[in-house]
Length: 65
Image 1 (cartoon, helix red, strand yellow):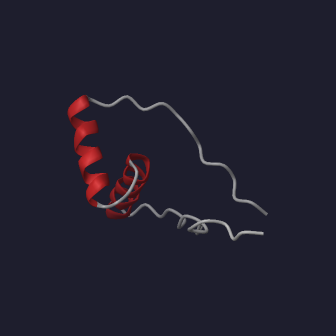
Image 2 (cartoon, one colour):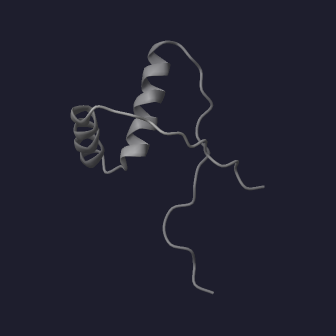
């Protein structure tokens, strides 16, 4: 069964914060979206909020048929 789709929503950020997120994401070889998810998970963990681990996704290109 495929995983449920991710929840999409608009997020308004100050330009300086966006720039800092872009730099952090590039340093970690992530997209800005993945960086935000990672930072949110880390912040929730520090607060003691339990969040289910993300489902593992297949990496790489699909095999040729």
